[in-house]
Every structure is written in C-alpha cells, then in structure tokens.
Length: 128
Image (cartoon, rainbow, N blue to C red; front, side, top):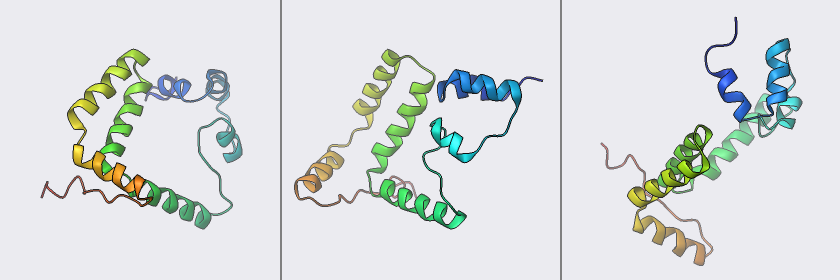
C-alpha cells in the first residue's frame, strides 16, 4: 500500500525528492543525524533533557515576539508550501493589509531604537 495520508505529497516539498524516494521505496529507518542533514529537523541533542532545554529556549525566543506577526508568519509558511510564489506574495500582502496593527509596529520600532525587547499584547486577552 502506498502512503495515503499526505506524506508522499508533502515531504518532497520539504526535503530532496531523491531522499524521499529512497525512504519511500525502501522503508528504511534513518538516524537523527541524517534527518538533520536533510533539513528535516533543526537540531539534534545528546539527551532528552538537552532537547527539552533547547526547545524551551527556542520557545522563549519566539514567545517574546509579536503574537500577531508569528501567526502571520505561520500562515504564510504553510500557504507557501502549497502555492506559487506569486500567490504567496498576494497572500502575505493581504494578511499584512488586514492584520497589521500600527500600535504593534510602533512598539517594535520603539523597542528596536531603545535596544530593548518589545512587550506585545496577548492575542487572546480580548477574546475572554
């Protein structure tokens, strides 16, 4: 049976189609180092604890950024995976046109000029 949950459709857009073909044809297991070499994972750590520490550090560095900007970036990356560059440029222009908050931009620029971290509002604070 050929994989039918989207793996064969999505993976060649993320890593080399030749690598995808080899793995799909053989079904072989691969190491974390190989996955890193193919760009399938960002980093490999010696222990679960080291991996958790690195993950928390990365999460913290993302969490101090504008939640709205991060949401837009997530959508843009996902959209770009399945659309042309031209369509993706239209998508991000539409997102920025509708979602860009002047107060967030002001906070970001002011913090940058002051060489400080900006403090952004929680996107869900108004939802409850």
